[in-house]
Image 1 (spheres, rainbow, N blue to C red):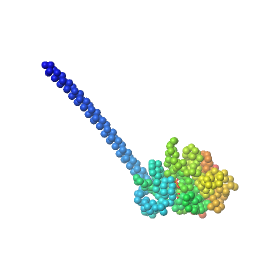
Image 2 (cartoon, rainbow, N blue to C red):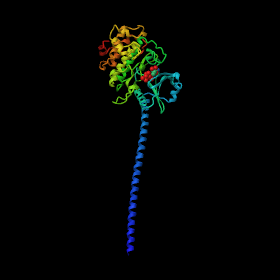
Image 3 (cartoon, protein in one colour):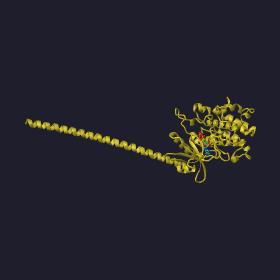
Image 4 (spheres, rainbow, N blue to C red):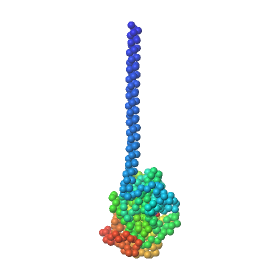
Length: 396
Ligand SMILES: Nc1ncnc2c1ncn2[C@@H]1O[C@H](COP(=O)(O)OP(=O)(O)OP(=O)(O)O)[C@@H](O)[C@H]1O
Ligand SMILES: [Mg+2]
């Protein structure tokens, strides 16, 4: 009897143990299953997100290209541009700037182009490239260099521009250091029309583009001349980029080029269209004097163009002293005095005192108009002779 009871007790204990073990096993299985479901769910969500991001990126790229092609930009393959530039041969190199090398090229349809090959790896370069394409696809003016198309694959980024047979303005004003090029002599009336056309390019960016575009790197090498010495402003897309966020890295491009940067922008980073007006004034001084903006090899007091020229600009007696000797006195003193007055207004240290580009244009129009019958400027027929109130205010 006792043995039977003992047996039954043991049987109960065994049953309880089995039940406990079984329920623990079940519970662990359930936990493992839930954990498995959680993991697979998380993984598939991550995969889906990545796929979506890739898809969005592709759609983004596609829509950019779509927008660009809709706006008349051509999309080139690397192969097409390789053959247009004779394999990016050394003899086709026409310049080298912040973006990379610039090549002369001929497209299959016979059009001459300038091809810029990006040599800057990394995110900033990519970003600049993208903005250049997007910006240039929507800005059109006879005074801005036209972007014809681009090539963008995983390894190469290229921009294809209209070809400007006479290159950068600076090449005609002074010899470029490191090269043996001899500057051609630009006549006074050609200088005047270049000044007007470049002013019209900036006026378009400031007043006709919406939202307004600040060039940030306006300088003589970014004024290109076609075979008839008509001027177009270039590189406004690249110059526009750059972070203005407080505390972010300030690149050289954001700061512009030495000698052209408005004092308030250099000191505070505060950028307005008036910063471009200052740079324009420096270019006017280059046209008047044939001097580079900064040349520390010059005599003491003459190294910085603005500081040297400014006191002489408004002095009728002294303005002749600053004139480019290459002009050999072949200019009207009256016109020189007027252009010098515009330059003096543009390089005012106080941004508010500088004129708008529209005022500069209105002040230069009558001067260029005077030369129309004999000058090389063919497109002056659309210039207006009337002066704006501001132009009159400037006493021009
Ligand atoms: N569309 C073009 N047609 C003819 N020559 C060009 C053209 N674009 C550029 N060049 C030549 O290439 C040179 C270099 O141009 P690029 O714009 O790359 O550099 P940069 O103007 O000297 O400096 P940055 O990179 O600061 O603009 C110019 O000075 C000009 O001689
Ligand atoms: Mg340039």
